[in-house]
Amino acid sequence: MASSSLLVHRVCYIALFFTLCFAADPFVNFELEYSYITASPLGVPQQVVAVNGKFPGPILNVTTNYNVVVDVKNKLDEDLLVTWSGIQMRRTSWQDGVLGTNCPIPKGGWNFTYQFQVKDQIGSFFYAPSVNMQRAAGGFGSFIVTNRNIIPIPFSPPDGDIVIIIGDWYTRSHKTLRKDLDDGKQLGMPDGVLINGKGPYRYNTTLVPDGIDHETINVDPGKTYRVRVHNVGVSTCLNFRIQNHNLLLVETEGYYTSQQNYTSVDIHVGQSYTFLVTMDQNASSDYYIVASSRFVNQTIWQKVTGVGILHYSNSKGKAAGPLPDPPNDVYDTSYALNQAMSIRQNVSASGARPNPQGSFHYGQINVTDFYLLKSVPPVSIDGKLRATFNGISFKNPVTPIRLADLYYVKGDYKLDFPTKPMNRPPKVDTSIINATYKGFIEIVLQNNDTVVQSFHMDGYSFFVVGMGFGEWTENNRGSYNRWDAISRSTTQVFPGGWTAVLVSLDNVGVWNLRAENLDRWYLGQETYMRIINPEDHSNKTEMPVPDNALYCGALASMQKQQKVSSATTTLFGSSELFFTLLLVLSAVISLVS
Ligand SMILES: *[C@@H]1O[C@H](CO)[C@@H](O)[C@H](O)[C@H]1NC(C)=O
Ligand SMILES: *[C@@H]1O[C@H](CO)[C@@H](O)[C@H](O)[C@H]1NC(C)=O
Ligand SMILES: *[C@@H]1O[C@H](CO)[C@@H](O)[C@H](O)[C@H]1NC(C)=O
Ligand SMILES: *[C@@H]1O[C@H](CO)[C@@H](O)[C@H](O)[C@H]1NC(C)=O
Ligand SMILES: *[C@@H]1O[C@H](CO)[C@@H](O)[C@H](O)[C@H]1NC(C)=O
Ligand SMILES: *[C@@H]1O[C@H](CO)[C@@H](O)[C@H](O)[C@H]1NC(C)=O
Ligand SMILES: *[C@@H]1O[C@H](CO)[C@@H](O)[C@H](O)[C@H]1NC(C)=O
Ligand SMILES: *[C@@H]1O[C@H](CO)[C@@H](O)[C@H](O)[C@H]1NC(C)=O
Ligand SMILES: *[C@@H]1O[C@H](CO)[C@@H](O)[C@H](O)[C@H]1NC(C)=O
Ligand SMILES: *[C@@H]1O[C@H](CO)[C@@H](O)[C@H](O)[C@H]1NC(C)=O
Ligand SMILES: *[C@@H]1O[C@H](CO)[C@@H](O)[C@H](O)[C@H]1NC(C)=O
Image: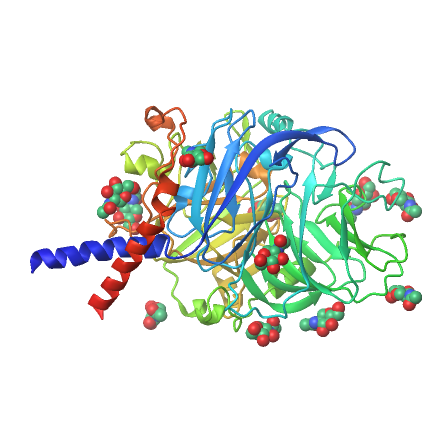
């Protein structure tokens, strides 16, 4: 009796492990080789980070629930890590690709194969390097998760799928930008804005020099396209618009929105949006696609404007004349805020699963923990320019946090991140948040910095329930959207203002919180939430350390010189083993029922 129940238990365990982790879902493999190329997006030759020789990198286009295997090869001359912005890798921060969770992939041709499942996700995301400010030099690309065929989407299938990657751009290399920050300088105004890795169309011969290659998007009249736009830039919020065309917003960072037309949308650093754009104009000429800098003085920042071309197959001529106007709200801060809060979730649409995505009534759940994270302009700490949250400028741990836990490395980090601003001098520390698994938390981001900030959380989406100007007070809770707030992974926080988000801490791991503004992030404006299930002793709520994990820091001696191992292929490439598992699984099901 005892032994047979033990057997059932073990079989269940194995079956559960495989259904949860890998199930019968297909595997898809990608190889991303990072190397330098020379490109001149703004007319000046410079070193750019290419992926498989391309800038921007290739689109990774997968389907919900796929097991994604990405072999990243580092042919740069410095360490590399790649992170998957907005992908909620369940139970495995081992694959997140930031320094608190992963050892960097050493230079000189080393590789690391990431493996994770895009479980119950749909939508538009991107990948990018997370270390050494490399994102300022490229290495990014779109990451699309399409719905399974059986799940309806809340709009007619579009006639095409178009990716537009926008971002501010410097002609200085990422190494020079890094040095500038290390020397205590600000980065200053970018040299331009790129659209799909290309400089502006020459819409004005004074402002745009000759000989710059621009992006052209080719379309057919009468058709409707799904246009996915990602801002992967360094620090500039960009206003995105297409001359004479409405942008019907349908999705952002994995959630379907209540569909609304916009003439332009502010896209903050690290944010992704999908618009449906109908080619309903008469094609008397081509149309401008514009991404112009926001919340800065337009007169001074005029050249920080990306311009591409929308070309109908029946177009009668080139685009000419002035660009479509940006929002005229220099003296009206509420315009941008109202637009942000107008982006709401379509609570009756299906997301990745057949049940409506809004059926989770977040507005009725009691908040268990409260965090107020305050940012201020960069400060000098021990003679170095640093950026902070609550007076802590984050220093990466010597050993990634969960590896340190697993091998009992002492003193690697502290669990004492202050839950509110402290009245004490700022300091540099490896201090992280001791968060409670299954907590439902409220985070208020208070931006006392002078620039608009993008706040991002890895492994999660949060509900953006409120935004305002001035100091947040408890009274502001009365204004929260408790019904159809958008759920996303990156939100803006306006200077002199606050943003409130609610998050359900249901994903075990150690997850990065950061300013997506690359300069602030580099200067230490980040931390982690350590979310551990104290009752899990069997790897059910968190995956075990992957076989191919890289070791560094206090565990560096465990790292072998890289040799080819084929653990993944032998385990899962075997259909025999797979069918054995299926048999085991059905046996378990029949035992249980
Ligand atoms: C490097 O790539 C090989 C196959 O290309 C793979 O077997 C190996 O696990 C990878 N190394 C790491 C650390 O992921
Ligand atoms: C919300 O989704 C439903 C279901 O797909 C769809 O019929 C409806 O048009 C959508 N509503 C809005 C406002 O986007
Ligand atoms: C992604 O894949 C889907 C389904 O295969 C396809 O419809 C879509 O056009 C693809 N998108 C891009 C940008 O390649
Ligand atoms: C080009 O830009 C300059 C500087 O803003 C402006 O003075 C000029 O009128 C523009 N030229 C045209 C043809 O719009
Ligand atoms: C959005 O604008 C298009 C025209 O570009 C129009 O056909 C459509 O009905 C509008 N949709 C909504 C939801 O306003
Ligand atoms: C095409 O549309 C533009 C803008 O709506 C309009 O000014 C122009 O007269 C139209 N041209 C033709 C040939 O219909
Ligand atoms: C923008 O800069 C120009 C030139 O320096 C200046 O004249 C103008 O007053 C500034 N505008 C605002 C709104 O600050
Ligand atoms: C939330 O807290 C209130 C008061 O503490 C309590 O009455 C209510 O039952 C709680 N709601 C839920 C859903 O737990
Ligand atoms: C972290 O929080 C848990 C309870 O949520 C508590 O038991 C533990 O002592 C805390 N650890 C530290 C170092 O504060
Ligand atoms: C920062 O805080 C100080 C003091 O509360 C306030 O005077 C100042 O206006 C704030 N600045 C911003 C940009 O929030
Ligand atoms: C869980 O995974 C760890 C490695 O991360 C391993 O040491 C441990 O034995 C596993 N526990 C069980 C019950 O399988």
